[in-house]
Image (cartoon, rainbow, N blue to C red; front, side):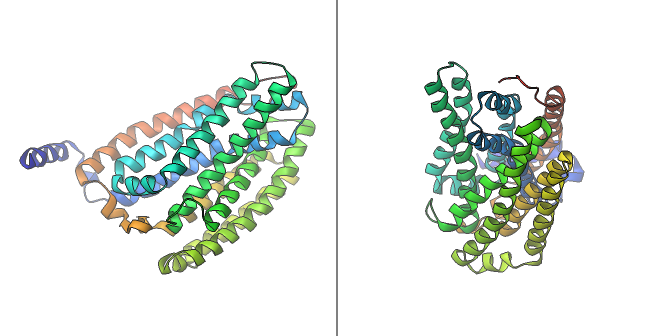
Length: 342
């Protein structure tokens, strides 16, 4: 069996392009992993944010506009979460087993929240009974708020290496991601909504931006106290400090853009905030994929032939996925008109 495995690996390596050999592919996949996570937090983040802001609107027509704004996008946006989990499994299987095994109950809770978020708008539209719609509207809000909270809890516990599911840094990180989703959703509604609905979302987004900055600082402080010496050193490293400063500047740009009604600029600033946030997570983890089990990026990665093959496949498939999203967002571009529903 060992000879067969060695022969298969050698044959596979012979089929792969030479320029890939010798490149730091494990590190490149680590970066790609968090780029994909950033895409998910940006794209599904505005779905979550709109769902949270759904609680702020009582007018049925405005609620229908909120559902119509995210209706064409939310199920496609979840693809990036699947890609994130699949890439972690394919490239860093030992880290995948360690992290998901340690937080498997949290994984089920995330899936339950995502299911509730996706199911509730469909059921909301099935009947026009007031009690029915209040119940499923509340379920939509709960699913939309619980999904980013639990994701933030998971990511923070992963970085800190918390042995349990619930920790102070994890709770603060979960609240930070909820705030990030709200400011993302407000920027998205700046592009899709009009009139009082857009104005109300703008004010909510500005408040969420301030809360996000406070929660990020508190999360970093609590994580530094709860983590080990390498994490405390990473929190005060020039890279992380620089990313935090960049985040503050981007949030300031977001607020200014909303106040000046420059909604495209506000959404661009939101994208910057999301990717800066994800970059902080990656910088705090590196050189580990899972600090608690001491699995480094290079040690946790699969062997070179498989890593090279995965890199070739990603080069072919990721552009196709991005093209799909370009077509999707182009097809449903433009504002939601008054009276338009889910």
